[in-house]
Image 1 (cartoon, rainbow, N blue to C red):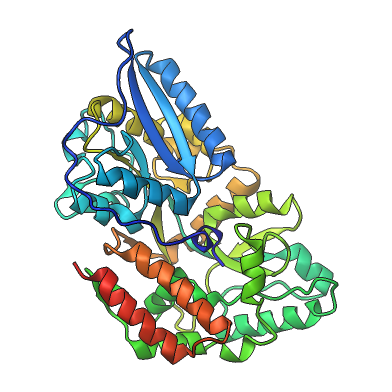
Image 2 (cartoon, rainbow, N blue to C red; image 1 turned 180 degrees about the horizontal axis):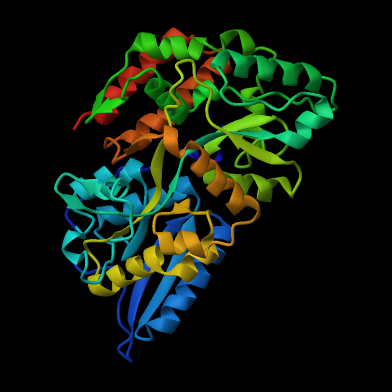
Length: 423
């Protein structure tokens, strides 16, 4: 399933008092301002950010930027600990799942008064910019967009003698594809499956709900029932024993995806994660992308702010921090450095700077291909979303290990969600 989300574990939810005191970066004896900038990611992303930061420092001699990064789960544990003592980094990468948490507790600086005065947002699609809003302020600036996709390994299908899937495709047709691959892959020394159990990924279920005309949330309220969720988890029940990759194999391979390791022929993810598959596979395979299956003719797709940049309320140097955010969002050379690895850039100048070959060309082509069918963009998610998403994966694994029925699992998840979404 989705590699980044497989890394999730519950982070500490330390108290988050309003951050008004000075923390984060500082000054040296020469008067140079030092900013701390934190992001989640891997070595590849760190290298790209370092190139961008080096360029920023060349153009802003009085500002020094210290970077730090961690895997997704560790990153949010670190931020939660810092928030408890009002010591967040000056600039931090933000996600829609956590924006409400940090904005509500006033850990982030509202940036609206900087629009046009240090922070240029004129190039950002007006449908995407509101993703960084919480209540009456903008607390995060989107840097890229992505959309969900069904990835498949065309080279593996050729080896197995199976035709490539084609869109449009129903969920029943996708399940038949999984069965065909698993049957042909059973004879390999290391058995190959059509997919893992995709019903364990919360984002796929949210797309499925959108396909049926249901918006998953109204504020912090769930717009689906235990019966809806039970039916979703029951939809792959007959396939779990022999036709879906066993959950224990997924666990053994973490943090690398089974898809990248050629144990499955397909996997759902955000479109920009194809670069990670290629890297983790060692260049093996030919990865292609399709829209999600649908029984309604509606894709359920939307463009999501892949990541945002925020400024900590406790920063001693907010003007310089805003300047860094502006640079990382708008500078064309930053677009060339990152390509689509942060998602498709939200600013045309950065998109135009991308050398559209290989993976970047694939992602740009995919988003262009679905542009006419995407729905309204996803804004800030309910506070507690990160917790309920984690629990969705954890509880669904109990089904895969035979420790809970879909109905029992749905009951447990709803009880957990009620606690997490309660304010």
